Length: 269
Ligand SMILES: C[S@@+](CC[C@H](N)C(=O)[O-])C[C@H]1O[C@@H](n2cnc3c(N)ncnc32)[C@H](O)[C@@H]1O
Image 1 (cartoon, rainbow, N blue to C red):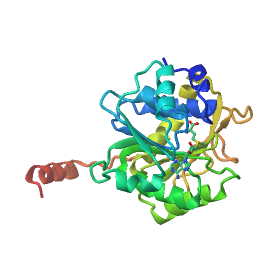
Image 2: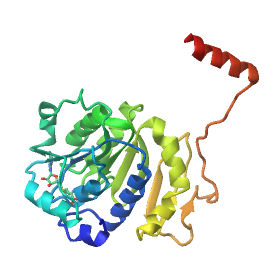
Image 3: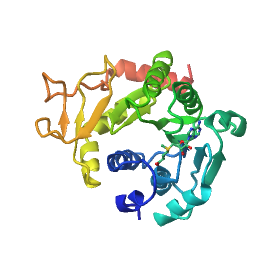
Image 4: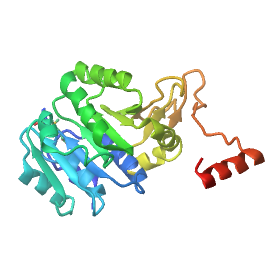
């Protein structure tokens, strides 16, 4: 069974708090189908978490400059799973377009972790790949987001988002990673941030504060930090910490409109 102790025994960089954030989000994806995709695997530390959430018919694509498949298989076995349905892709991520059929993979991926070269040029191209394969409910995780060690890794993700506002939106930033989702899924994931996320994080041992310091008119992302006692588990803008500004659906039904829409659906017009 998956536990932090088992993941921590696998060499790599994936941290305890990211482990908790991933579990909270992957638990939330329980009803969602799709493959897993990772660029930058090393010895399979983060990949072993993905393997634990893979449903029987789902694949895990593993891309690394020099993929150490035996080490990754050992890592997955260490979390008591058989390393099946792996798609090993040894070589730089820039080779992926010549190895994979992105047309066939359209909308097929629900989790994409980008943790490879960390340069601006490469992360931008990796986001282009993610856009071709990630489904509507999918999440893209960018490692070392806002890390001072790799400035271009962040600036080029932002550039990508600015140039392609309908591909992905920034959902969350926390513990050295940025989380993107499809624009149409942002309200649903944001509802989860406001309702179940804190408890889910605590269930895995991470007591955190989730900040949402602005609203849907802005870059509507949350920030997840270690627990800040003054702020509590969940906090809004600095001058209004008790409020989260949310994007919500508002029903605008009237009997005539209802009838007209029913007629439109029936007649296909
Ligand atoms: C920080 S490590 C990944 C850590 C891993 N996700 C973990 O759980 O600890 C970065 C990995 O990216 C790989 N890498 C670097 N440049 C790459 C590229 N252009 N394409 C694919 N993989 C790359 C490296 O070989 C290295 O194994």
